[in-house]
Image (cartoon, rainbow, N blue to C red):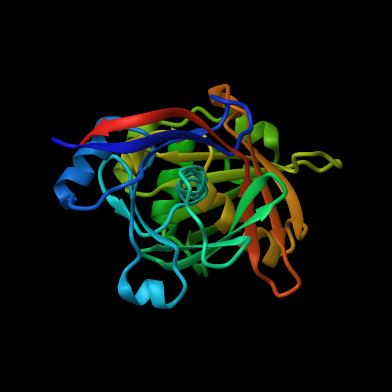
Length: 284
């Protein structure tokens, strides 16, 4: 078996081992779907990515590289921390974007723009679809989380390429106190993101947790797709300002920080620091 260049990147942190790790295979050419999924299952990180040349159509539209994103059990159309971590690894390995200051990533959801914000990278959140769950399924989920009805301020099904049920809770303290029944959550087949907003001025403004037992990740340390969807929802509905910072990973002894900004055109950008923790070659 050949060896391929590899990085393990910590995303949404500038301090190693305080964010969400991502495995990045910088050359995924020639690998079958089964090989990709097997390796992602073996790493058992929330996501593993494989970088490839863009498709002919993607290159014509400006894509600099293509990425395939896998969780331990399936391929994802889009995910946030893999987008930032893959771009970080691609640039560190010598990648040169076609447009100075702007990297264009091709993935199953389409083309995703990534730009620099000082030392950070930030991605343009893909368009989001909103929907609602049936009352019966919502009751299952709130019971699995151990929530009382009065602790849930708002709910929304969110999908920007990766579906999440978003729950806005009454406080960050309620978010941090949750002790979910992960097996019960897994049985619903729904990935759930919860957020609480500090009522007094605070930085970070939001405390976020992500429960994804449905894809074999009981709690994800820091989640870009969820934070992007939460931002699109909470800003649009007046719960959050156009610029804020979110904390995630606190209960896992991580210090993830997600920077959110909505520009004048209404585009939500989601950014964070990344740092390479492991660099070498992988047998694959």
